[in-house]
Image 1 (tube, rainbow, N blue to C red):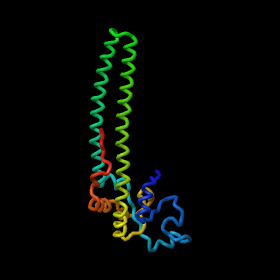
Image 2 (image 1 turned 60 degrees about the vertical axis):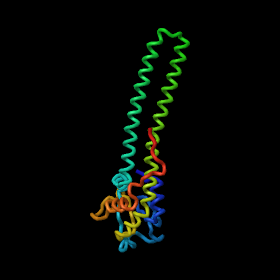
Image 3 (image 1 turned 30 degrees about the vertical axis):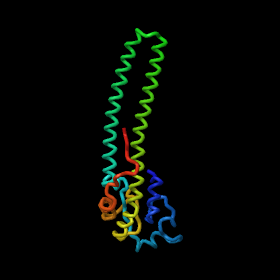
Image 4 (image 1 turned 90 degrees about the vertical axis):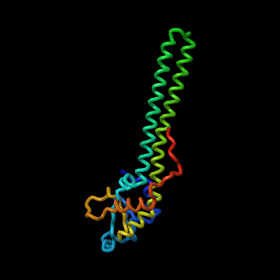
Length: 200
């Protein structure tokens, strides 16, 4: 899975050196012409699980709770709207026998337009949930960058890599847990969001 551009952006902004498969020599923090083996005696690496970093942090848990609450409220609203539309459709069907064809056709078309407008509105609300989560993830990693830099330094390491890029490693390389603890202390749950979630 490719790393999103915004993840690379916050890593670069923090001055964190990133090693991952496919990166050319000279882009991993080594001078051009210097091999990994030559730098290895003084190079300390740490790994980070980016997904768990967000998911298990106070920030990520707050976002998940907000989205869950908004999703449940949206589902309740959808159920109420569906019930209302179903009732009106039945009423319209029953009235068909007593309405002139032209009048019924106009009423049916108006009902269809209203139902479609409601469907689009509810779909847009669902989309706002995804947009909110994406925006909060971007904000989280922007705030996390300097904290991760401090944790990396405290670990005595110079290079941070995504744990998914590791094929074989040794115990003690992962700094996800201390990073989560540092982020919870440093930035907390990130509330309030500059773009509050308003759904429905």
